[in-house]
Amino acid sequence: MGRWQFAPGPWPTAAALFFFVLTLWLGNWQSGRAEAKRVLQARYDAAFAEPPLRLGAAMVTADSVRYRRIEVDGVFDAAQTILLDNRVAQGAAGYHVLTPLRPGAGSPAVLVNRGWVPAGRSRAEVPQPPTPAGPVKLQGIAVDPDTRYVELGPTAPQGRVWQNLDFERYARQSGLRLQPVLLLQTTELDDGLYRAWPRPDAGVDMHVGYAFQWYSLATTVAVLWVVTNVKRRPARGG
Image (tube, rainbow, N blue to C red; front, top):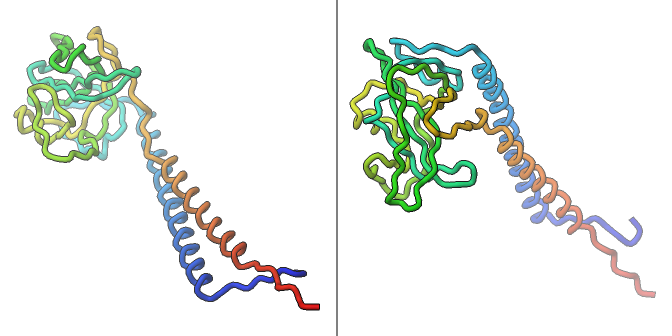
């Protein structure tokens, strides 16, 4: 075109093609992951919209009740309460309070995340949130009991204070037969705990964001390949 010519070299073209195909494939892969997560999110939303499921003597599976609203009654076992450290709510550090609920009559217990309590003025001041006495009837949301986390080394619980919930270790230590879920309590009780659980999220937005980044990079590679290979013709001698 006039004094400009498009003259791509073989090796820069091969490199650009490789990275273009790679980033385009990664974008498509993340788009596929996002679509799978949309299906999963729809399943979570449908489970959350169903009527509460009442737990009884039968042991459930985690997959069958994940993000279902659960109803259970029993008595809290206050002696088995643990506090999960470094949990933030309302812009402040504190603890999540976990207490097993014993339905009785041989039914498996249910570990309940009762809510959040602020930390004391110093690390030595471990809060002692009150536990409702006598029979209670609760509703909550069933979630996976094991949170995905990274620890640089094995961290032993310090009394009632745990850094993270290791469900199997808790079951062994407490000696309880537990349903394979953690119940996020939604029923309000007079215990002073703060409960504001996030909506179940399958992570669709994260994969959409990654896909956008890879597609943007593929576009950048293509544009750079074109721009760097458009050269001005040398002027002819007169």
